[in-house]
Amino acid sequence: MNEEITVIYCVCKDLLDAIGHRNDPQCKVTDAEVCMLAIVAARLFGGNFEKTRIFLHEHGYMFNTISKSRMNKRIHHLAPILIEMLAQVWKTENKDGVYLIDSFPIPVCQNIRISRCNIYNNEEFRGYNASKRIYFYGLKVHLITTIDGKPVEILLTPGNFSDTNILSLFNFGLPKGSIIYGDKAYNWYEIEDLLAEYDGIKLQPIRKKNSKRKFDACTEFLQKVCRKTIETTNSLITKMFPKTIHAVTAAGFELKAFLFVMAHSFEFAAQY
Image 1: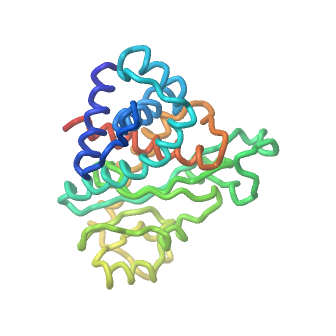
Image 2: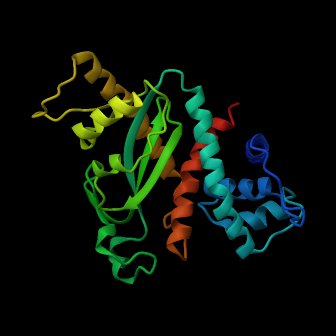
């Protein structure tokens, strides 16, 4: 654990230094330490910031302490910066130009507690996970990863949001000539044509039986083999979830969803 926490801090500091980030001179706890706290919380403490803050301070990883409210505010500000930085690193290193797209659910509560949920209170958050054949109440995480499972784009939507419709919301900030493999839910010919024409990106989801645009046998084989990677990525991310993700507000719940994805991304960053 000691080595893992040290590596996380070093990666956070290097990423912030790379963009010329400066700490406020009045802050006793640096931004790198705050980022370390957030990632360690997601990787080792089920997203519990308070327990992580106490642990890091008592064991000497942070010499100065920080209030709970101030810590939350700074994490909300810094997390998007880290996510974007890591995404750019993974895109640069992905020489193959192959990407994968998929989604997985994050329940905000058990189904029996839906009527008492204070974070979300709308029918659009009721979703269905076809692969596990279960209904859930919460968010859906939409991911684009590299061929080896490194997250490069992430979007959060209500649980009943269609995987097909998410294609119109992604930025697809990928290099020209990239190929994206997905499952049958991502068949949308208009988006495929637009990506190919304007961005030079090939969206190649697994075709349905009645599809008018069939792929050759080689492409179909690659689609099925490559999809196992992102399915494994989804499983590794959800494995870090506690039984219940504690959050008081919707923004806090969504922040922790992002942090779990970023914590998985740090698994690769620690290898360098």
